[in-house]
Image (tube, rainbow, N blue to C red; front, side, top):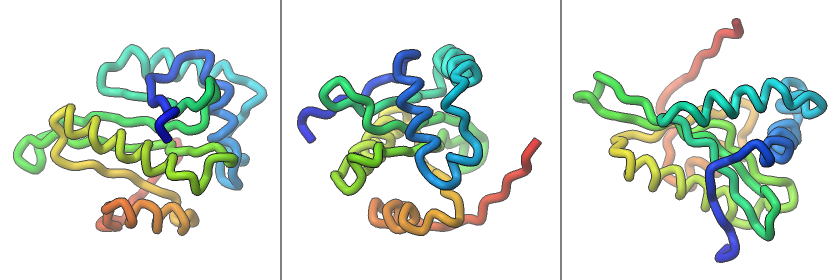
Length: 150
């Protein structure tokens, strides 16, 4: 894993990121790798916001993983800042290699560096393998999440 770099995503990374987002049964239904326009617009918004950190894991000049880390200041928990991890993906060729662990460790360390007191994430209820992975890393399934499509 020493040859792995975790860095901020740039526009040239978007095709690889979208490819990973689309490379599972849930993502295949909601992502559109054939039209990168909305993804590039989203990257511009993310890049302009200092609380958003879209990163890629790169090995041998190839994007092999990604996640988004959002820093959220708040009033609850005595004014604690928290972070939210979203869009965790590892390229199919790299699954089981420890890359996902490295990405999550990076996110937790960056959260600490940013002064966060809590790291949270959500995972689709059908992703039972992901749930076991997060629990192995010390996350607890402490809440029930809700969403509303708009």
